[in-house]
Length: 486
Ligand code: NAD
Image (cartoon, rainbow, N blue to C red; front, side, top):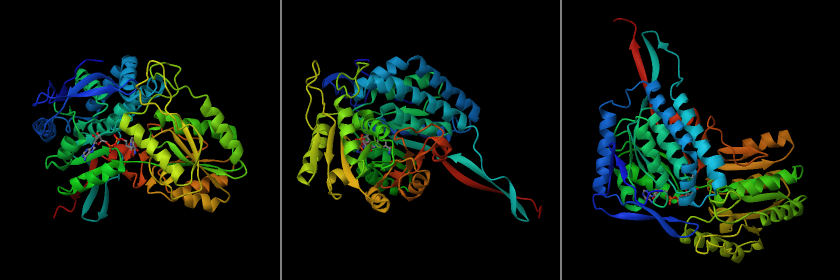
């Protein structure tokens, strides 16, 4: 990790025009580990103008897909050769375990890029056809233009890749604003894109606060599209800002995934699934399983099994390969999660496990919190309805299929859900009835690069990954060719 980073604009490494910097903190110690420029409005203008030029002059959009693909495949190779460095830096800035960043996040990112590089070459559509006797019709898919990519802290590099690489793979140019807490790996990525031969102006990074430069980007009249991943609250704001210039707005927002265990499920597998589904990314994943609906006949067995497993979770230094759970992202975020635990208990919940701040030797000032299990019958409680974004397992009992489906759907979110059962018919019926964009059966996490990551309800609009995720960054154009000759 460098002591200080610069921003990447128009193929140049630049400081902020104000010369100001922002600290980057290691959440496992609360020590400063680096700093990045605090971009000004003038810096953002420079980035937008550069992206505009690279797009408007056709430098990038008119390059054959195979040429764009070559550059992306090269960057995937570069990341792979530096996997360890990327994984360590991702862990240092976010507190996620090295186990996760080196075995999952970074290799998955490499696969995501390789998939996008290939898939962007094979857009399919309607065959040329005469829908009226005088003319043939066909469809073009064209890039949208300059895309503002605004990303969260929980998957610092992955979210940039899902948004920005998809956008550039199909010919757009981007201005990326990574989360203020976790900008480092995005800047490393810019360095590797440069090495891979990406033309200047195609990928620009500005680092700074969302409230100033994020807002400025989102309402700028030279920006054609906003691709945002983050909270539902900020997503709503960006829809408002984008409306002044009728921008396309693609949103991946909060979640509150149900995890439904029927009485015929393999309970041991469900317990393992619940540990992973709730713990992944230290409980800070938009699709974390958070609401556990357990059939009354297996309730005790599941809850006891879950607590037994959570007791074995190793909380500690995220850089230690044995650690299962690192710190939360910041002091204020930990307080927010603790506030939910308190509120959940005030609203009738019973604390079954956890809820305390563990003291980790050598990491006493880290933002740690124990995995926490609360049971409740109050479906209107904040811990059931709102996104906590922390390691909190909220447990509820049910007895009937219809009851559990209605409860599972009774939230504003619609990102992910899982059901645990051996009954194929019931599983298939539930995939129809659950108003969530991803439904796992006897699992709760995997998303292959070939499959979409879409959203229902207030979890957003549009999709990442798969060909749907690439189409997201294109306009469709009807091309009509007169064949009558008259
Ligand atoms: P956030 O909404 O607070 O911030 C996300 C980004 O928006 C950051 O870069 C931030 O600086 C910027 N921002 C903040 N206010 C802004 C404004 N007014 N205008 C423009 N930009 C602004 O989210 P977060 O705390 O970084 O991330 C956690 C959230 O992200 C959770 O809600 C989680 O569910 C969601 N998330 C969703 C997905 C998904 O795929 N649906 C994936 C990851 C995270």
